[in-house]
Image (cartoon, rainbow, N blue to C red; front, top):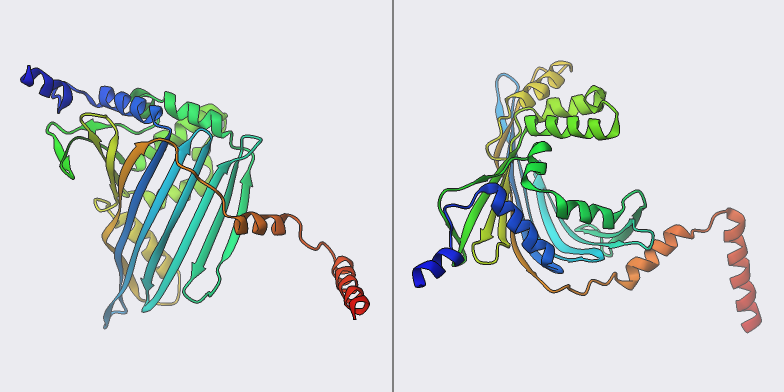
Length: 318
């Protein structure tokens, strides 16, 4: 009995990538809320040579973010900070972002940024009514592993169990590269009736991304089929083509220097928890900032009128 129970509740070697993806999709669909802790890291350098002197310009970035999300209606809250160092200069940035489903089904986003040189920070507001969040969520819940493969994303299941924080997990992996992006573009072209591959901007972007490889790893609890952590990185990327494009840009200038991008680490790690919906509330100051943007003083006459009205009030009080 114990042996049978362990087979039902633990790692099952008969599981396939397709069946596991479907179970993960069903499990996350049943959850009404989610929370995540995310860490970002970038360690890169630009090696420069003028023929006689070699130098290396380091670029580093680290960031931590806490994310809360509700599924119906869709709403997200992201709070975190980031430190960036490049060319000998450092920058610290604090960020907040709230995205909520608007009454018309679109997406409203309130974003706050505060840099180390800024004492107060500022809010920005954006609304996209072209997005139907309800339809988008319904679509995401219905996409099977086969559908994802049609769009260029094929999952593979590791033959052995992995362990994350004492939990036995399945390891589901996928890679997004130029071939996957080409498949995505062709599929999008079929749906829109527009040949996106002939677009100059798209072709240029693909040229830069040739050799780039984004590895995705999902660690899925063998008992609940919920993701407990995710890892993404670009560390297996071949930068030969990107450096060739970079070198071509330098060759077109009068400078005879050469440069090469070196990527030591570019990764994101996420830990996840799923459960009941969390309370996500847009701060009052964010709503006020959005109203100020929507209702600015539209003319010099309006501004003068407000000043005159305030002056008259002060005179009357005096």
